[in-house]
Amino acid sequence: MAEGSGGMEPSIRNRIYLDNAATTRMKEEVLQEMLPFFCETYANPSAIYGFAGEAKRAVRLARERAAALIGAKPTEIYFTSGGTESDNWALRGVAETYADRGRHIIVSAIEHHAVLHTCQYLERQGFSVTYLPVEEDGKVMPGTLKRAMRPDTILVSVMVANNEIGTLQPLAALSGIVHEKGALFHTDAVQAYGHVPLPVQELGIDLLSASGHKLGGPKGVGILYCRENLRLLPLLHGGAQERGRRAGTLNVPGIVGFGKAAELAGETLPERMERISALRDHLIDSVLAKIPDTRLSGHRQDRLPGNAHFCFRDIEGESLLILLDQQGICASGGSACASGASEPSHVLAAIGLPNDLARGALRLTLSEETTREEIDVTAETLKEIVGRLREMKVGP
Ligand SMILES: Cc1ncc(COP(=O)(O)O)c(C=O)c1O
Figure (cartoon, rainbow, N blue to C red):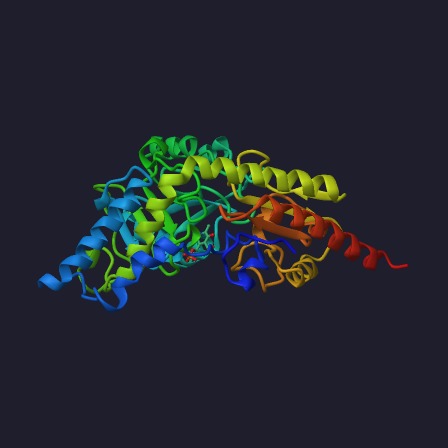
């Protein structure tokens, strides 16, 4: 087993964690910045007495940091309970606000369930939804979107990067088509915020969802970026927090943690992308070289720096995950939300993978803490496990 970074408790040292798309380890600096806001500076930032001032200032700083990472204004950032809420709010909010202009929405077929299930809900409310097909590499073709646009289209939602296969989408080309037709463009950036540059203005993004726990921040806190001067009805009704758009007492420690994680991510983004992409490529090359009948899913280059996704022919993904776990390797068969459910992934179906390949899916997602030694151990372990499983299947 690989010896990871020194100085950590043994259980962490002996584990190879390659499921960073499911969640990341919260950074120590993030925790330190959050801690005072639990038991010391615990005032409600909406209060007017002086004691609330520090919490108020901390929320303001977090908003500035969250905005800076995507070149947005702080007033364009709304704190939420995470990616799921932000996606729900963007879709339901736009649908309700602009229903008088049209009732047609377009999303890609490979969106996260936070988007897809919200679309199903909206269909039940009388909206019509087009689910755009994607190419074999997971890309949405601008021409496909162009053909799907209708005079009554009010919103298009295409994720920055897919959570299973990591494919990055041509956002600027897509948003250009959307705006030409006078509709709004939302993107689910939960896997991408803090991992790839996302200049919202250059990319023509009107609404963007992100989540703290995917970039070394806490769980249960996210943002919705909503372009200035855009009308958007609230999803949650109640108090006047977040300028009357998102009710509920602010999760001050979580928001502070989100802001710190965003700041740290911004400071290291280019070097981190380069280092993690190189490790990812080493992993992809090693696995494809060592293990026959293996297919890389997604686009070879246009993918998240930390994402490698393979399909092994004649392998049951679940057995693979269990055997990897026995070797201390944490991996996933697809999205964290889908694991446990044995249905084939809608993403792999959409890229046209036949079931015999889709069943043997494995997602390995790296972080800045991943070492080359961990990658080498993982590739070697995989080779041994896949070989063993295939032998068992063929019999003596
Ligand atoms: C692409 C994508 N969207 C939305 C979500 C949901 O985010 P959260 O866990 O913050 O609710 C996830 C979580 O895995 C995701 O990967």
